[in-house]
Image (cartoon, rainbow, N blue to C red; front, side, top):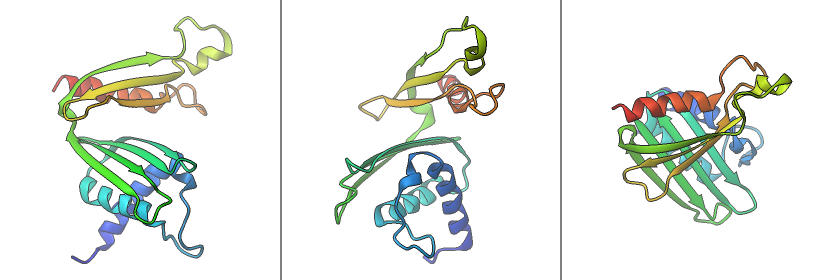
Amino acid sequence: MKTTPRHNEISANIDGAIRAGDFESVPLASGRQIAYVDWYAKLLTTLTLVVGESSIVYSQTDYSVDAGTVRFVLLTEQIVVVIDGAGLQDQEPQICTRVIGRKSLVSFDPTASMRLDQAGTKSYLWPGDVQIAARYTGLSEPLLFTSAGSDADRSEHPGPALGLLKALLEDLGR
């Protein structure tokens, strides 16, 4: 099958969504044009195939250059994609991709870092960082999400964690 301009557009959209996080430091294989290192290019290909035309609800990356590991979690309207990678600096890195339905959410444990009754300028950052441990059927360990509860630049706007929290509450109701 030949790639189409739409495949490239989907891949570019996914790349834009996830490079805003820890993947900003993914090295390019070529200095003149966008040509990612092999493992990242394959990750984008996998996500392009799996996500397709679906909208991304939330994404989180944990990328360690020193350890050569990555964990990437992406939620669309219907699915959760978990990609774990190890040996990223090796000739043949190990990449494992799992796709599960969002409706397979069993439970989650949310924790906020700030008190509701915080006074002064700190109150504009409420609820602080939000950590969520989400348990899904089909995954042996909970997925850990950590994100800001409010937008750092515009404190009156909710941060990514509150959108994720809303999506997870909806998932429990399915």
